Image (tube, rainbow, N blue to C red):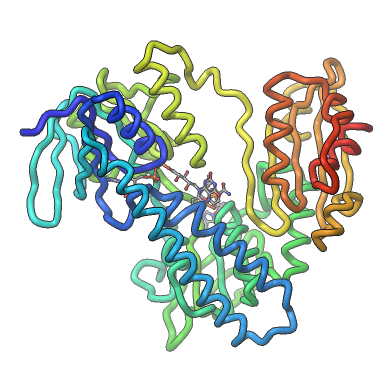
Length: 454
Ligand SMILES: Cc1cc2nc3c(=O)[nH]c(=O)nc-3n(C[C@H](O)[C@H](O)[C@H](O)COP(=O)(O)OP(=O)(O)OC[C@H]3O[C@@H](n4cnc5c(N)ncnc54)[C@H](O)[C@@H]3O)c2cc1C
Ligand SMILES: NC(=O)c1ccc[n+]([C@@H]2O[C@H](COP(=O)([O-])OP(=O)(O)OC[C@H]3O[C@@H](n4cnc5c(N)ncnc54)[C@H](O)[C@@H]3O)[C@@H](O)[C@H]2O)c1
């Protein structure tokens, strides 16, 4: 049996970064990835990067509403091909980066635990065992397919990964779930010319956001032609000749929605099925997530977990920060999850929505006396230059300390701007500090002179 200093299960963001660092230190590392199409993990193959490549292409397509559906369908097909080229190149680079390292071996097989030091690897042709002193679980997440009749095995029902591989632009798309994936895909496909309907089971759209922001997002998407069916009860999805028929109960009436594609975007769950974690003494919670402490240690003393599999925030940069925590421990440092400061996020609709910290409702519920700063995106000259002045910017300030408790930015390039607010919050700066900074011009960031200058 081959023996390693470290076995890493899953080629995700945290795991691949750790493998490269340990390998560079001369440690013997085994990286096990079950899918040869997933070297580099979800982000570069079926997540962030391909979706943002398509968001960009869709943005260009949306500039020409006069084009016919057939022309847009050709542009869409070209965008899918471009996405494939991009992901293939990144996948190859990611693979070689580890495979070329003297001390790192990449195995293409499915890993499961035999004990807390022995892992079984099942490849296409054989099954063998590897022994590892330390083991790191980085198996990511997988889409939740809700228990709706007719979803499983239906040729018109897609996960996000599958839809991004569809060459033919659907004329109509039904999206189950109005979360991150649902919104990004609604914005993206409507930009290409698809008629999109979002089905959201609860009446409250974007539950975690302030109502003014959620409504602003909704009305921007509606202007792009996206239909919202909030509080929809999906009864079944049937495969017909050339299309899917989704039967819903909405506002007391039954409706039939016909579409060439149905996207299941009802959330993602930790990927631990078949891992036999219990053989290693690794405990999981009711959702299947590996339970970890603030140092990302599992219930087995020599096993850690990182990224989506821990059931926390599902972002690539969180998986990377998990790597930092583990790396810190391996090298005598003391960085833990408890030291992690504000974690921003962006939803790549057009224009993008980005947030960091508390929203108004949360801040008031937490007992803060708050001052609310707001401005419309239309007041930002750069938004006019970019020909998309839609949106709303909002900040929540603690009246006692003048510190920023949170910010919500719905405007072009908010995904860049939010990182500046995060930094100011981490440094516990007075909000007026951002209000009187010199920003380059014309940029979206100079909106902070107005937003935080109030
Ligand atoms: C459509 C979409 C868009 C997204 N957009 C963004 C975005 O814009 N920004 C952002 O920050 N995040 C985004 N995310 C989320 C982000 O992709 C994930 O949070 C991140 O990739 C998770 O990384 P990870 O390190 O946990 O593991 P992953 O990258 O998921 O890697 C896990 C790997 O483990 C492998 N594996 C699983 N089980 C086994 C096993 N038993 N044996 C061997 N290998 C195994 C899998 O094949 C996979 O390659 C998006 C996700 C999706 C689906
Ligand atoms: N820009 C980004 O950073 C980005 C982009 C995409 C995905 N992601 C990550 O991927 C994860 C998964 O995204 P997601 O959008 O699948 O999950 P999500 O949890 O954000 O949203 C799922 C939505 O589906 C709804 N839903 C669930 N069951 C339903 C049903 N039966 N009928 C109708 N609606 C139903 C939920 O109420 C919720 O609104 C996110 O948590 C996020 O971290 C990040």
